[in-house]
Image (cartoon, rainbow, N blue to C red; front, side, top):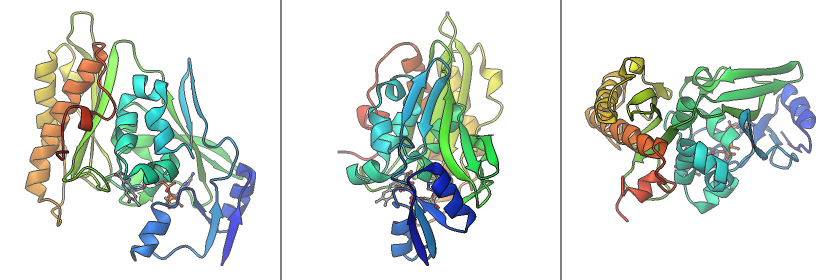
Length: 298
Ligand SMILES: Cc1cc2nc3c(=O)[nH]c(=O)nc-3n(C[C@H](O)[C@H](O)[C@H](O)COP(=O)(O)OP(=O)(O)OC[C@H]3O[C@@H](n4cnc5c(N)ncnc54)[C@H](O)[C@@H]3O)c2cc1C
């Protein structure tokens, strides 16, 4: 049993290569262990004190989030909120203020819950995850990272060091919203993100939609390229139908599979409509759930 505090990425990689599990905010790992979900790993390496691993850098090539960037920092970063709004919408919904201050983007994506609130936004925004080990670095499209609930294709000795997002297209906007039964300390019953690019005549030039909590991993909705040239209203309806058709939800104590299949279509339609409003230049405050009164009442 060991607990190592890493001060550099190299320290962390050495500890991980020796069998330790990384812990960032601990809001999944420690809380899960306390709830009896999985025992705390015997060997841990704390990565939260690595200088610079929480940097958020925006430039002409796009956005880079250090793995330790917190949900609070993501939600309040002006470039993320303005140009990568679906991600800010997702981070703003995570847990409580305390959870958002210590919970990290690296922990959220590597924990691989299909109900995670940043995953659908990262998929529609075309994110890549940077994985590093003592043997080198590779970048993986985020839609290929998750292999099942709680599982990723990362090797045990790989650390997520960053999440990269490309520069958004001109005249594009994005949104993530979720169905929830209460306003805080809740996970999505279902959720949907959309990224919409508008042509000069106001029709849809491109649309991507991804779904949370309706499959073993985040679901990328396929076949939406046929919607190019459609009105936003038609694209939103078609995306809703495709989302409901492609979802493979389960029934559990929180919702039936039938209810989830229906409501994820509703969320997808609203996500497309909201993303298109943002693409047209409208400012809709983060998170759209609260601004538009979607989900639990206040
Ligand atoms: C009360 C509460 C409410 C919550 N509400 C929500 C919610 O609404 N929406 C939501 O999406 N989540 C929610 N969560 C889950 C959690 O807060 C998030 O998933 C958070 O982003 C996890 O980050 P962390 O840094 O705490 O991860 P940790 O618990 O430190 O780690 C999680 C997992 O990822 C691994 N890991 C962490 N960092 C790295 C890395 N850099 N490279 C490789 N592996 C890594 C760890 O080994 C572990 O397996 C909630 C949690 C709590 C306790």
